[in-house]
Amino acid sequence: MIKLIGIAVVALGFALRLNTLLVVMAAGICTGLAAGVPLDDLMADFGRAFVENRYVTLPVVLMLPVIGLLEEHGLRERAETLVRRVKAATPGRVLLVYTAIRQISISLGVNIGGHPAMVRPLVAPMAEAAARSLWEGAALPAEAAAQTTGHSASDANSAASALQNNPAALRAEAGPLPDAAVQTVRAHAAAAENVGNFFGEDTVFAVSAVLLIHGVLEAQGVKTSVWELSFWGIPTALIAFGCMAWRALRLDGRLRHHAVREQSKEDAAP
Amino acid sequence: MSLLNLPLFYVLAGIFLWLVALRIAADRAHPKRWGAGLFWALLGTVFLTGDRLPPVLVGYGVLALTVLAATGQVKASRAGGSSPAVRRAEADRLQNRIFWPAILIPATAVACTLGLSRVHFGGWRLVAPENLTVTGVGLGAVVATAAAWRLTRARPLTPVAEGGRLLQSIGWALVLPQMLAALGVIFAHAGVGAVVAGLVADTLPAQFPFVAVLAYCAGMALFTMCLGNAFAAFPVITLGIGLPFVVQAHHGNPAIMAAIGMLSGYCGTLMTPMAANFNVVPAMLLELKDKNAVIKAQIPIGLAVLTANILLMYFTVYRIG
Image 1 (cartoon, helix red, strand yellow):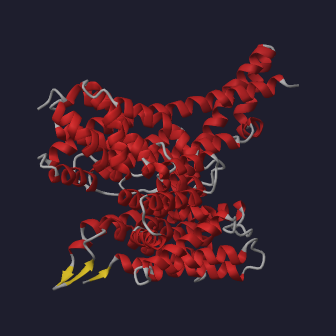
Image 2 (cartoon, chains in turn brown, green):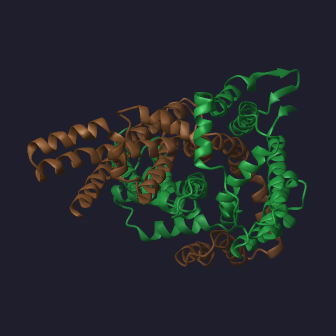
């Protein structure tokens, strides 16, 4: 039981919001000492594992110079411009398409994507741009509706045609996309990457996860076929995509709702 | 022997980290030039010479990284990037050409996996066969950096400056995945998994087939949340709960159990800060104010998929032979 002290340290550390590196190091040291490992051996274990796992950090580090350089030269701005031209683009749809591409490609053994290479420079800005379009678009009918109820029909008509002639004026009135919405859209972009990555992997073609399962069971004398293992990954892959679709459409719905409410609040103020 | 292998890319990453460290140390306006510089220099050293240093020395080096991070030394420099107006002008000038280097990253990685890995001259291979995915991504990054450099006509050290800016916005969270992997090794040495599996097995009424499935799937998710890694949780929970109860006691199908069990572990990965490379590093990379925002966005998906997995397994594992 004393060996579980590490898990307790992690739980306590997260609860107290201490620095995560410190919590992890303390959990390791407590667990090791509780199991009777001398401190120097423990540090050697830590050092060895840290060096062996450099490959986890490597793609992020190597990706930063090129992504930083491209961002300085307008990569995100260009991605936003392109999405703005697609009328049907909403943040939810952009993210859902990305999850689909990610799931299908990784199930064929092609690992494109990743948070530094795809999400930060392309997927998140595209979703944000679509959110801005949605925000401004959703404010438009609300504006027109407020005009019709408040004034005579002819006034409403002239106001509506004025809006049509000068959509820029309306955009200014709709106000910028609130920061909280930007944060939510970005968090969902990271989620779209993770869901696509995790739940596409174990289907169709044998990859590391399937081989690990196969190996662990075989070591226990349980025979399974790699094909059977990957086949039973398919239902969950479809369910996960369905859940992502639900979350993505909900994101659109909430954003639209928020935009309309914000707009009517501004109308009621004066 | 091979021309392109993981150690080569470790050296490149180490050089980049050292250059960033030196730039920080030389920056008089940096709020913590010595502390932050030391942090990235230590990490750069681990990348450059990690496998030649004695592990115990690296271990104390990691302790030093932790102390620097916990005492607030790893701050980002104040110097920002170029203004939005400049970036917009560049976007208008370069148009869609700006995407080419970005597309080269996955394209090179795919070419590496599918084609380049087969190229060899006698005993010499072009790409090392082990760790092919990571090597491919590394090669993609280098090729794309060269292409972006040419396209933007940037000065030689500009990629280091811009990459360094992003590196500092991630901060100490960058090494969290490596730290957690190390913690997993310590847990495994100490036999933490066996204790957890034993506890679950002793306390649950596993004579009911549904309880066996529930305990296995929820056990995979929960233990993955503790370790941050489904691959580490899988052998422990499968040998401790899955095989004895679902397969041996109730004659479930091992392939269905294991496949859905691993995916239940992934549901745990969506819901834990311990899976730092998927949940915490991206939050820093996207400059989110709440570093748990990604986890919060994923919890509904994790719970929904986990529930579906439990039902799916219960309705198939005992019926399909």
